[in-house]
Length: 365
Ligand SMILES: C=CC1=C(C)c2cc3[nH]c(cc4nc(cc5[nH]c(cc1n2)c(C)c5CCC(=O)O)C(CCC(=O)O)=C4C)c(C)c3C=C
Ligand SMILES: [Fe+2]
Ligand SMILES: [Fe+2]
Image (cartoon, rainbow, N blue to C red):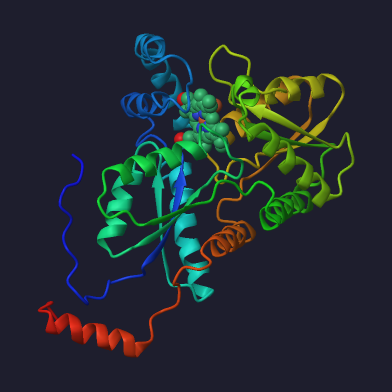
């Protein structure tokens, strides 16, 4: 229901916490690795017109008539193979990232509240924004955890925040980080994880950079995703001093029958093995955190396909997750986009004055 009355703020009452918040948003994930949870999750995810861009009615028939009958059980079995004791990896990592980002921004002397939310499932973006507002937040920097912009991911987060704003009377000041695919600290963090992997396990013949795919059509419609993936790949190769032929960009997680961005990751790995490449390292730079698509599709399925086709060594390089270099990159990114907002703790005299005024206005002690 739009425009529910919001509790008025008492004149002079000081907000309890920081006035500025960073909202780290990721895709979302099922609540449990079982078919009912998968059905709820996929029904919300795949009904998003940003994700599946075909006429609504046709898609509703396919989604409810076929996909939601077959896919939940199959996907649940895959999730079960990567589920952590604390829950789905995507959620576990995103929650940890929000905590660490809070610490990093605090260490920089910035008075900011960090929260996280999921585009699909829980905690929902709208509920989290409501809670932030209740706590006195007046400015929100939205940080979608997608280094490369795409309509299906980044824009869908923006849609969801906008939908919440449509139903909110006093909308906070909003800022969005649309991309960080070429951010030097992000590239340096990725390069560091590759070097650490090389030091630990040795260096493979080729570095495969696998990004989540998108329908090829979206590239022709002007979605910058493909170009941004290629740029991240080139910058990472440069940072590592790799020569042409030592690295390649591929696209994974094809969904449906349409043509998606090529080359496809798994067929590419099979071709490499069949062509005599004995060892590969695979990194997934488009995923801010490990999830089903990296842990199951790459570290399990793609590994098996490569080894089965004659490859001998498959190294999976984890996502940035809670890596200190990755967290520093996110903190610097947020700090840059927070510029101009009031981030310093109020002077103790100001706080005392606010408290006095609040008491005079009848606020409880
Ligand atoms: C990182 C960027 C992502 C893009 C771009 C993206 C596009 C996209 N995805 C689907 C369909 C599915 N994706 C699924 C899982 C999934 N996708 C991303 C990220 C991007 N998707 C992540 C991080 C995850 C993992 C979530 C988790 O819980 O771990 C799934 C669900 C899993 C399954 O049933 O296979 C589907 C379906 C489309 C159609 C699309 C672009 C149009
Ligand atoms: Fe996806
Ligand atoms: Fe997948």
